[in-house]
Length: 517
Ligand SMILES: Nc1ncnc2c1ncn2[C@@H]1O[C@H](COP(=O)(O)OP(=O)(O)OP(=O)(O)O)[C@@H](O)[C@H]1O
Image (tube, helix red, strand yellow):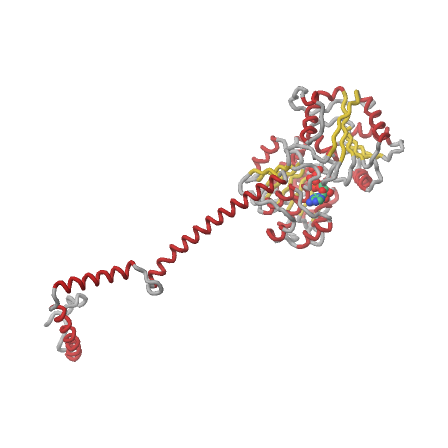
């Protein structure tokens, strides 16, 4: 039996008898093969060597030299290298564009006095049309903005709106009358998208009922045409029999009423997605802190977006904010804790308490340019001053926390309508209240802090309008002048040098006992 030379067949015995026909066929082929082999065997060794070399070269060439359009495997192996290159190139381009965008943002922010800190801060909004192009804003918001005559975003809106729309928490400090309300209401409506009956989804806390009611109206104006359930937490609402079943997307309240609703009426805030603390530094003051804390705890949704807004943001409040917020962005417009630059500020020495009424009457005689707001230290003083003015030919009214709710509302409405020329007030309306076109704010009693001063005078000079602020001071107030003088200087007003060089006081609230004389 012949051994088959093939390596593949080694060890297999071929039965030539059984497969004689096939064997004969193979033999024929073998014959020809043999003849070739014979030829090869007869080759000269040098020819063989050259042939081997050529063969080896051919083999090598087929492995290492890709022939375009021919070697499929080569091609498919070469492609990822190209893709990786393209990918890397894309990445570099992406990074370059990102840096260019960051540079453009920085220039834009500088131009608008926007100061930010935090990571990955979204680009500021240059125009309200970007609400649609960047964030797919529904047409009703743009329509309502146009109807309200709001054309360009203010600096706080430019920056706070994209931050909140990108799902980031934020604490913001921007001057009085600079449009902070819209800066948090607009993204809130956009994020909520549509009405739902699944429980409260957004909460806005304001320190006073008047401000809560104003914010409620602003929300309604911007949501016009969309059936959101927007509720103001009134005594009536909180006492409704089916309180927990009242549909509510956005709830606006003072901390006290909200805490009452949580503890006594089992209000569920666990689904709240947005929480705004307006006038946040006021809300963090001792009198309100406990109630605010209860609300913040009740809003237990882990993906909640919280934001803090105010015209004054003391360092202590910032520190507190940082402890409760996640990866928050800090936005400051202009200088932190400064007065609006559109207010002309003046300090008037009145000697003693007796001098105040004389100075006030004199001021009104010289020029009474209504509407005018007169701030006093407490409700007793408000009542007393009102008694002095009510029988004069000046149309005066008064507002303080001792008045029944309806009377408070009427006082605001009449002042807004121009029926009241001079409104005497305690600090209950010093924050957030937006009376259009208040020409002058008179601090009849010296404010008890620089932030109280900033908020009080901020009732005038709003939304780019000009305004005036006059602050009376007595001998007893002199030692507290420095703080107010500093605020005035920072906002560009002229202040006598001696006031600025008064000794620095470790801040204590200046609330002396004032006799009405
Ligand atoms: N982009 C805008 N263009 C013009 N007016 C605006 C714009 N945004 C808001 N306003 C108007 O500016 C006024 C002041 O706005 P807002 O009450 O929100 O100020 P604020 O910053 O909250 O002030 P405060 O610190 O006193 O609470 C309002 O009458 C509001 O309608």
